[in-house]
Image 1 (cartoon, rainbow, N blue to C red):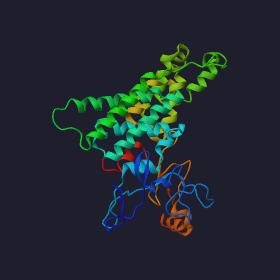
Image 2: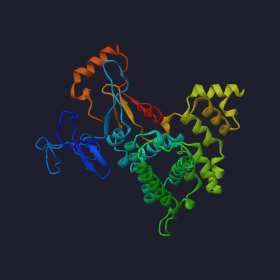
Image 3: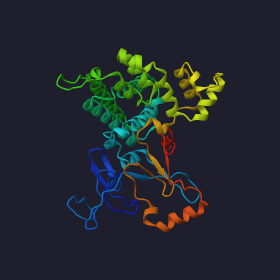
Image 4: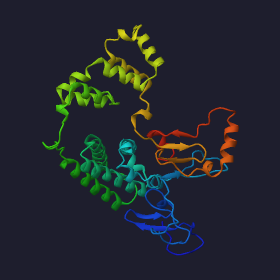
Length: 351
C-alpha cells in the first residue's frame, strides 16, 4: 500500500501512480524506463544527458538463511524483467507464454496475490493484442483462453468458497477474460495478397525440406503435415526425424535406445519417429532448445536477466571479486550464469 505522508511506519520507498496502479519507483528503473538522474530526486528527466539505460533485470533471494531472509514478489519481478514489452520480441515470446501456461494451469491464478493477478491478466491481454497484430501464434492464445475459461467455469460452479480477495478485482478479471475471448474469436489468418511472391506453394521441395529441418518441435511438424500434402510427404521422411533426434539428444542417449530396440547400426533404423518419441519419453526435451532465449540467473549477484541485454553485475564493477571466485573454483570453469526454465522460475516464489 502506498504511503501518502511521511511517518515512522513508512519503509522509505517512493511510489508512482501508473496505468497499472501504484508501482514502486525503483521498479520503473528497469526495462524501457530510465534511471533517475543525479540532478533529480522526484521525477524522471528524459532530456538529461546523465541518464543511463538500465537493462531489464531483477535481484532475487535464491535461498533463505538465518543471515538472509527475503521474499520474491512475482508482480515486481515481472515488471522488472519487462515481460509486457518482451512479448514483442520473437525470441522471448514462447518462454513468457510457457510461464503463463504454468501460472494459469491448475487454478494457479486464484492462489496469486491481487497485484500479481492483475499483472498476469494484463500480460495475457497483451498476448492477445500481439497475436492479433502479428497474425502469428494463434494456437498459443487459444490454449491460454481455454485454460482461463476452465478456471472461470470451475469458480462459478462453487456453492461455497469464492476466490479469496476483492470481489471487484475478480469481476475485473472476468471482464478482461471476455475481452481476450472476443479478440481470439475474431482473429482470422489472412493469406498474403497476390502481389507477394514467391509463396510457400511456389517453392521447390528442396527449399520446403530445409524449412522443415529447422523446426525443433514435433508438434509443429505434425501440424505442418496436416496443413499441406506436400509437407506431409516431406515430414514422413526418415531424415527429418533422424535430424530431430540428433538435435535434441546426445549420441550415447540415442545409442542406448537403439540397443533397447535391438538395433545395432543407425542406418538400420526403419522408424526414426518412433525412436524420437521413445527418447522424448525417456529423457525429456531440453528446455534450452525449446526457446530461442531463456532467462538466466547470475551465480555471482543472484540476478535474473535476459542474456541478449545483460545486467549490471558486481563482477563488472569489481574485477578483483571475480578473480577471487575463479581462484576459489580451483582452476575449474566458473559457471557465471545458469539457464532458468519456466518451472524453475516459479520455484523462486511462494505460489
